[in-house]
Length: 260
Picture 1 (tube, rainbow, N blue to C red):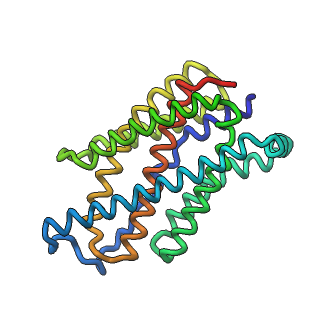
Picture 2: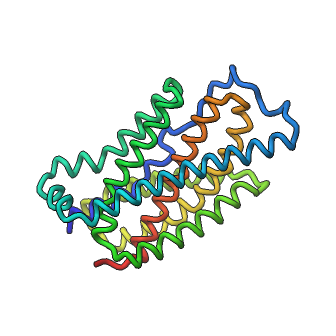
């Protein structure tokens, strides 16, 4: 059970916003300033729909793999008998995110898509403990609460006229705070600290959802009509929102979930 608790803490440490940035070299791209307002709005809606489609498909893939792995006795026995495999599965998603970040601008669109789907599959495998520890009823309930919260905050980030940059920077600082606290608590196993981390995590990832959604609008405006750059940006944005959703779900699950 100690191993389970360590996995929960490690996956409450978000790998969101660690170097995941859209292409920043816009010298070859047309800006959206020449577009009419109607064309821009239609293009933005299509772009955001693509982002949400990528995110949703990744969540479905990760959830299906996590379910089959978490309900497989053979898989669990293999994992628990091989500590090296435990750490490989645990840290593989983090490694893939760093590769994604460093290679985004140089990769082709097809390679970016392939890496995104590989990451989603590996992340699902690493989340097997969710179905091994928590009841299915609490998982479903927490998922719908997460979806409603995420949807509301993403809609707010999309529609608000308020600049959320200051709030976003504050949330990112808070994110690093809970990362450090989570690492320390892996060794301390302090239940009160774990509860506080989860509560703060819910607040932070709720705020980051709105901030990341608004940020995508701004990047779309700068990205212009280049199909390859827009495609990579959609995948990068989907990854950020995927991690916001996933971490919000895990934080809420630790607060609300019923264990087997």
